[in-house]
Length: 442
Picture 1 (spheres, helix red, strand yellow):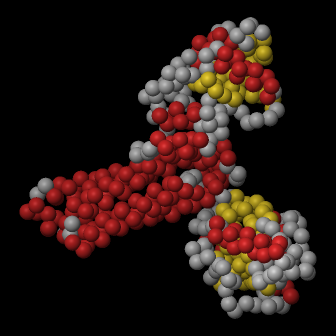
Picture 2: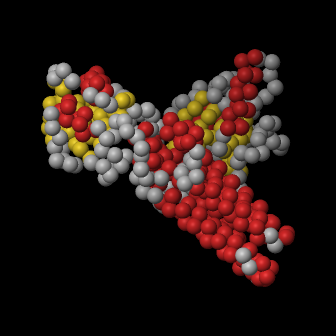
């Protein structure tokens, strides 16, 4: 349980004016502080209308007061919510009154951190709270809610349990050295390692999709000058976001637009045409285009169909998936088509854009429905990747030398890596970094 002895307070609703603003208190003195500024508390979990006053008795506002006694609250501590009018000035005055009565202002994510410390939720669920708040699409919101309900954590815990079971089995064999060789060589252990690697790989792929759902996809649109990159951006965003002219080098800086594909927020980055140039401004644009490619999740390489290119565009990173788009097919009398990672479109007429979107969905491992997905973060993907590396090394040692000791150690390390996802194995430094990214009041 949480050993905190202080009571924190913060405005829980977004900054700005609104019809209603919510102030949240959490900690052992929440009830006493709320009583001091509102006179009395209503029955637990029932709203009561109260005049809210400062510590000198001056009325600040009239609103609803709700008390959530521990341990059945969001943080596992006593929580009181004050629902007042949504004036930033009035809400700030109430917060000051709470501070004067003995509370302190909460830091970013401190309510969620207390919920984690008090075992009201694990770390992945706590992060899903922030993902749900920032969800930009319906699909992302549904995925974050599934993580908040524990869908992702359940699968991680089940994989950890399977790792522990196999480790116990292997270590039991080590306790009986006369039987160890037959035990490890009969194929059962190798088969179970194969099964674990497959489960890890499947979960990693789904976590990768979950990361895209929570953080969105970054697509860099690159190509030679006048290939139709800006026209493609305008066509996909369905409005004239970029200036389109016949003059090469019109686009000098990176222009970004956000669209939705299969329920996923996608940021398109229109970049400067890549070519050799002595123009200092255009050269900077080319440099920024190359930087944009390196940080993208996917690259659209746009080619002018009237002047097809046989050689790859210089500077394309091998580590980022690439889709080649032959644009301006309306000028050469060709039909829209798709073959592998190659699609032929017309940004002017819209022909082939549906093929391009379906290719993006396939390339990113998405589904149209998005059902059953969960939100995830890059650190989750990294932890799953590390766990997979440990499983691979353990399997290699088992095959090469039949070493049960080394396999058991790699299984232990794999389980520890997965434990970082839910917070079973998490340093205070990591917790600080995670919760500091949350909004205040959550």
